Image 1 (cartoon, one colour):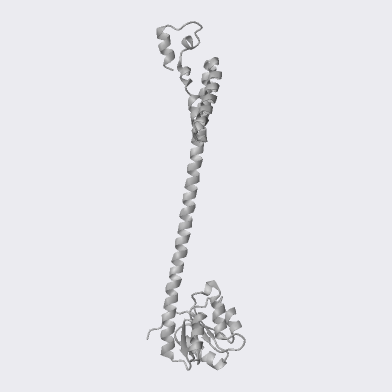
Image 2 (cartoon, rainbow, N blue to C red):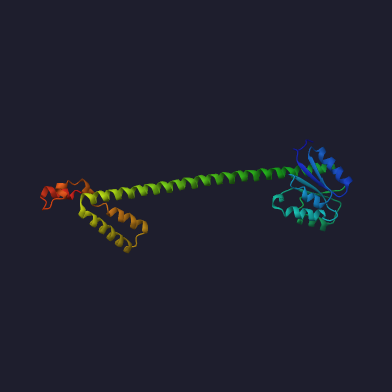
Length: 250
């Protein structure tokens, strides 16, 4: 018989002789032992990283059934193995024990080999469950980190898109100013065309974003005048054929 890995076992019994006997037995399996003489003391020792509870059924104040029920009422101990040490044999007592969350029973007087096997099986089950919980916690942390990274990347994309949009709007504004400077008559014309296009776009049911895009786009229609020679653009008289070709190219 090989010893299982060391765990911390809570032995609960109001009879000091039985409690000490069980404690020595558990220690012989290679485990650490905490003891409690009643249910209240037992509940107070749960935060000591208890891995397993060996619980007497009949005790004053809180009996084993009430202790088990309170343990199961605490989320962090929902999977803590509890074995009831009992001389009770009635079916009603066994059914009640299962209802309050007892995992298994062992009869008095306790057989060493039987106790070792029951503890080994339940502790292996708890170890597996603890590993699964740790793995789930790692996955949740990983997902949280990935989510934060994606959120940060999305924020950066939104910021970059906003900066690009602002740069585009600034470019349009500067080109419009340049066109207005080149041809004073263009200023009022550009503004009117922008307003007309906005009104028409809204009438057509375009979205606010589409309306904005269209308005900025139409303000660019005379930007080509920047490259038009002043002798053509500002000529007070009628344009000749060659000059008209140049003017149309804007």
